[in-house]
Image (cartoon, rainbow, N blue to C red; front, top):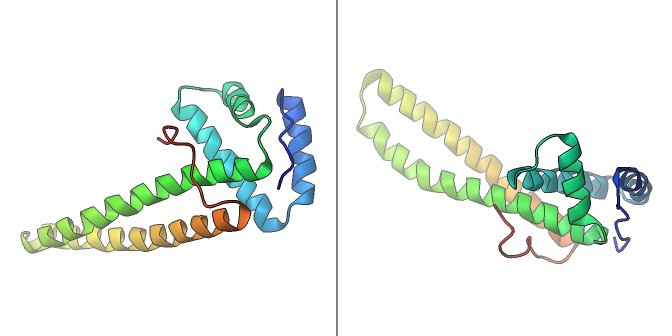
Length: 151
């Protein structure tokens, strides 16, 4: 977990990536892949487009970091997104539940169905938040991405 990323270019990144994956257990491999994907999302959100630009943005962001730091950064950003979805759903469900009672007929059924789907999504979001928190605690210090770097 303290191995540093050696990624000055795509070739070095691929070599480092393959080497480090051999040393991680299956859960850590999954965590690393999730973290790298989340960092790529962040790179794209900051304006990079196209595979090469995203890859270069990823490399620039993580070169020199430890595997643990990469995990905490990427999973921290993923946790932020999951917590935002969770909060949005917690706010929407009571509002939409009240709206069910203000509707009639088909509109009422549609709104009730919407609330049911939101409750299911909230249950999934709750599980995802718990899972990510647990993985961050196992893989590294309980921390999120650096302040000001979230979405």
